[in-house]
Length: 372
Image (cartoon, rainbow, N blue to C red; front, side, top):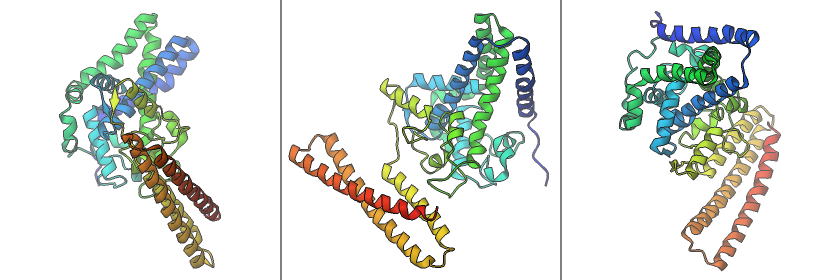
């Protein structure tokens, strides 16, 4: 079968910037040396590009996990052009197709099932999407967004203005044109590209699957560090409408922190989160599934399987009871209708069901640990 034609513009762009970053940047670092100003400027610009993609392109426009003030959208639109990863309209449309048809080689534009190279960068080097490249029918909401469409129509001009203009401006400020062009211009671009590309490639290969195994997405804390929180990809693929990827307080997700912080300033609102009971149920279902797979090879598999299923049902019942009481308590707090006596009574009830849940969770963990 003949391969699709090569997209020479992309091949030349990716190859030339990578070679400059791999050869000229180290040479300049040894021969001349980068100043702290250049290093800090590179890190700041790298963060600006990365967060414009993660908080803007991805969580705002592709998944609509929150609403953003126009000022913040302008900030993302410029940063997205600086990141040089196509317009927000095109990027978001591609990404929605990816989620709808994840791992389907004939439909997922960067299916991980086609290998690391394809999902990382290969899909952009040939005209694999020639028939659907400009089909934005799945992004009609974004076509009604004036900022998104302004960026889409002026994307080429914006990419040239930012990728040359910003490094040259910084070079003028510091009297170091070559240093800024190499560090902020090229090194920042290459790192920004490949850190983002890791989400499509490594995040579907390397890591664990605590929430679902229905697709190849993985959670990986190391990738989260490189991708501003996007490495918690298994969670994201099952709960894509949640503005968070790292849901634990200790998980590295600066994109989540940015979105939340902006809500305190009135720049973001309607932050969408998945109900915690759905998240916990997904985790327990995966634990049950893995335990059943281990148990199936034991001599007394049927007996152990019955015990697993019994404990699982008990855990589901107690979990349901706990979250139902918690939901009522939150509703009453919001409505400020709870009287002092009823509040105390309800809290006692919640403590009781929480104790029951914790006891059952402990039994469940002890049981499943035997088959981990």
